[in-house]
Length: 314
Image (cartoon, rainbow, N blue to C red; front, side, top):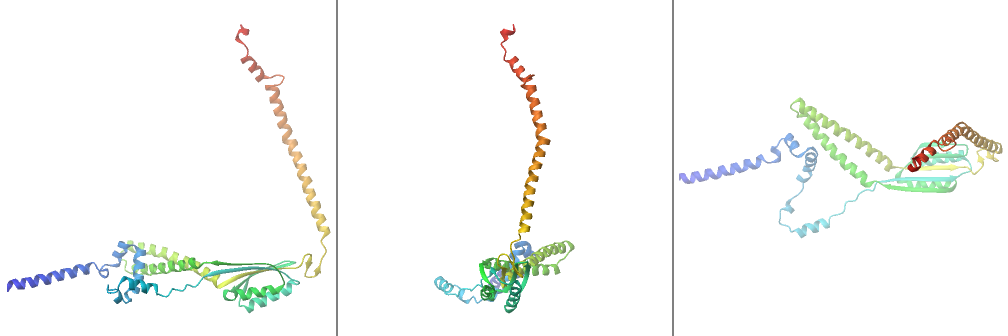
């Protein structure tokens, strides 16, 4: 009887020790600070972010009863995820018009009709240039209407695909926001000044990265949501708003005289530099030649003395 009781007590003790051992290594029993030090902040934040997704999944089909072939078939039959393409569209239209004033009014009404706005404009005596932002959904329709402003001279349409860049930035931003929230929770649990300062430093770095990524994402959204169309309108050659004008002969003649004067002025200064610097250099070179190889010929005499026959000296 005593032996039976002892056996039962031993089994109960073994079960209790096993349960305590498993519980001591469960994730819930480990403090956040220990997990942070053990796995690193990014891995821990990402793991906690995805834990809720996996906990809600129905795992009854993955208990080992179904075959691997069935699992592969279910994955193959899964519906593909549709990703919205992110495109930055730009267009440049150059037209020849009869009146800049009429063209300006037509552009203003055209922009209002397509819910756009003029971001910049520049106007001269015979030309007009406007940079317009139009909602991307109206890009094709809006740019076709621009052709009616005048005689088309050239057109350029471009589309830049930033889909990968957009969703990569969005994914990294989501991860940083999760990490930011995690640091905020650590900040409330700090036990001393050193730990508080360390967490605040990390939190400030992550917050700065989050704000930078939000700014980049906002800029991408603006470029994707609104397309850019540049309209350049120009009057026919030698025409202004007042009508046809002859070429300005007087201005052309003045320009010719100015160019000729600049040319001769350059020649004059070249001759002056040649006289001031060239003649002294020539004189110095001539003096050196006279001393070394000329009438005095110091170097010439030296070579002659060195190459003379010793017997002749005796």
